Image 1 (cartoon, rainbow, N blue to C red):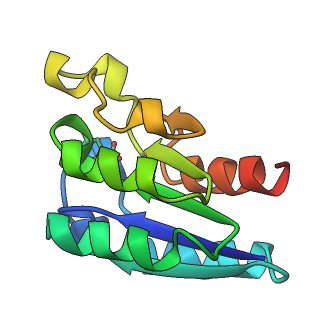
Image 2: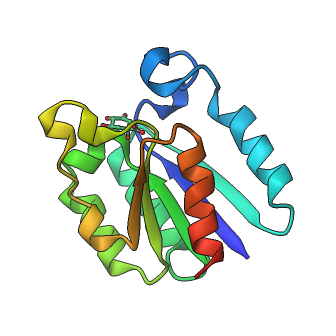
Length: 139
Ligand code: DQA
């Protein structure tokens, strides 16, 4: 079973950026924990600050992997192109957010991509990614 995690802009700064919202752990340490917890799952990781690179990755894995977990970060709220890429592929995609976007500014309440995803998990800190993997394993 192969699962791709895709992180969008500014998520390379996890552990450094706005720690009161996003926590103090960097993603690589969390990823190591996830891989230990799910030794039978191949968990690939990709992060980019560039919208087109996120789309290229969706195209690359979107016809062969068993699931995709995407935190499109701020592009969640703006990107019709990422929404179209998710609609174009046939691997199930789960949208995740570290913070509870619905408790925050109004512009974060809107997701351009949610309607094309299998489901959305938000507000559980980094554990949102694990919950998304659990959901994919229960497919
Ligand atoms: C985020 C929420 C987005 O609104 C924000 O732009 C991010 C991170 C989250 O994981 O909580 O960069 O996707």
